[in-house]
Each structure stands twice: as structure tokens, then as C-alpha cells.
Image (cartoon, rainbow, N blue to C red):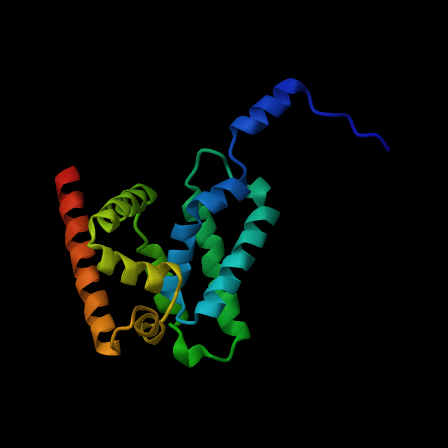
Length: 182
């Protein structure tokens, strides 16, 4: 069976509209952060993120272009978190369903989250090299303090101190930028 090819106008219109896959990749940090706030297990976080992506793709027709994609995807993620907690017997390590619902309801609006991320990125660049390296190893490469200590030839205590100081600097910097932008 031969399917008709879309008209050039349809191709142009669809290329202007971001696909849900592109939107998911663009906002995956926010979505993963949301999932991370609800789960402790990093492996489970990754699994839920992947399940969320698959569901977002499967339900692409339910998304209305121009609406808040992150809120829509986080709603799907919330249900995937609850589903994962039901499947796994590790509920003693997780939050109750009521707490998950409350956290999901209290999620900051998309605009604020995006502004926070921009300010955070700017503040990361202002960190001293050593502090930025510790933060990147811990949060971007998801290394634990013991691994960071070994990689940077530091004591475990000095890694904890470096992480604490870097977080404090980032928190103050982001708060200052948020205060000056309002």
C-alpha cells in the first residue's frame, strides 16, 4: 500500500512545532529533578524517567501544543512514580502517596523553574574551579563522596565540606539573582 506523502506545507508546519520527544529532551532535567525529589533510588529514578518518556511518546496526541509541557510530563511522571513504588517492595525507602501528591501539587510553575535553572547555570560558572568540579562529579556524573574523594585525592570529610560550601555558594547566588530579577 502506498501512503501519500504529506504536502510541503504540512511538512513545514510540523517542522516548526516541537515534537514531544524534543520537548522531553529539552526539559528532561526538570522532569528528572521532579522524579528525583520523589524517589531516593537513582536506578529507579532512571527507570521512571524512561517509562515517563515512553508514555509521553505514546500519549503525544493528548498534549496540546502551547500548554505547559513540563507540567503535563510531570503529571505522567507522578503516576509512573506511584506505579514503580507499588511494583517495588522498597516502600520503606520512599515517600507516602499523600506526600508525593502534596509535593507534586507544590511544584513551582514552569517559568520559575526555568528561571532558577538559568540562574543556577550562571552561578555554576562563577564557582571556583575546585568547587565546580566537585559539584559536577556529584550531580552530573552521579558519583558518591567516596568516589569523588578517590578521584580528586581528597579525604571523605573534605569532599563533604567542599560539597556543602559549594551548595551554600550556589544557593546564595541563585537567591540573589532571583531577588534582583523580581
